[in-house]
Image 1 (cartoon, rainbow, N blue to C red):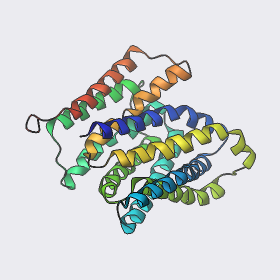
Image 2: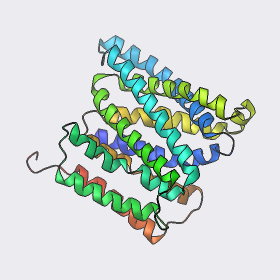
Image 3: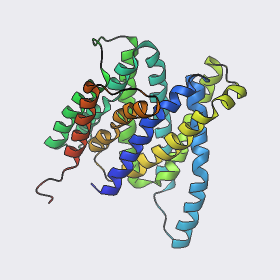
Length: 292
């Protein structure tokens, strides 16, 4: 695994984790479908200048990446999966606690390698050990009460399944298509699919969007435009199980962001969870002796 790819995925997890503050603030002004729809469109628009600049560079050098069919199919599939996962998560969190929701969502670190077996992805013992460490870390980090399964927990678990499929779809299409363009298509698809639900189930108002413009811009430009693009580009030629472990650092960064920005304190239990998560990431990236 290249250091460049790992850094891209770590930066992705960092942006997603710190975006927790923006998303929490955004919910004070907008409904979940409105917030997700608008921020996805903002993310797509933010990438258009980048695509124009890259087209000039590639045009001058004569280099192209991927083909149109894979680009459109990959972007559309990722957009629909992103909409589905985000919606399930936002609705499910209304019926469960944030700690349990964070733990159950991060179950994709287990689901991805399990699904990878059926897709003939080789999963080494170190990755499985890292998954176990990461699960233990997530438990200490997120679970602070007696575990019980309810309606919200089921919805969040379905969200984790969809996010797992999202990671595997990216793993399939990323080497075949332009990552930035595919990410742009993903956001426009996610945004447009959100609109019917936004108008049917909520009452979107321009004034509310203007009141929540700062969290919308942060979540749209950074969390969507930058982070999801980094995920698609960073996942190229990376085992999806390892990628999911790195991306699960989002839980650590969200806790740290709450500590630094919102003044929330880290308990010994939460600090231990963060340490286990980082240990899992390091273990997953250690090279095999045969490769050395």
